[in-house]
Length: 169
Image (cartoon, rainbow, N blue to C red; front, top):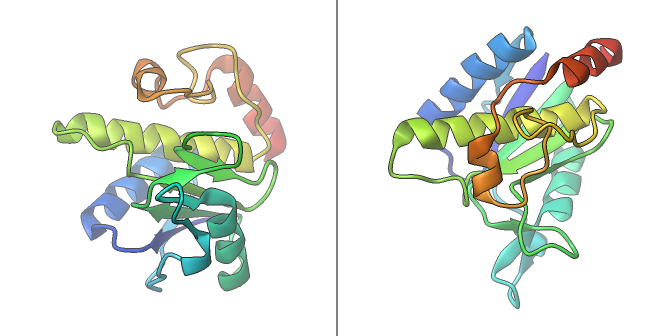
């Protein structure tokens, strides 16, 4: 079972769409947390104007104590990880916790935005299940160095990654 946890203000409609899509793709029950979490202030880096994704991940781990197979945090904050200009998300690999940011996924076309959001959610959950980046550019586990890479790939696992995912469960 997967828990979706909003960190900051996220539209309920977006969480519902993610819940339904993740449930179908990963064939598992998905629940949206009723708990409201603020983005931790210590994660903000004023020099960058961004939030440290690792600090938010650690915050999520310290707050969520319920027993779920995986926990996916969703935020609207612009995230970075040390050594990178930005990240779309981060996950323990393997582990229970993952986060994604909607900040750089936004698009005027709602369909494109939803696809981007879904791709990044499945990608980070794939890491949480222990999957590494894939060399297949259409696989959801392909590394997105830019939004162009995200747009080119699908939200599905390639045969190799799907096989690894089934072994991981």
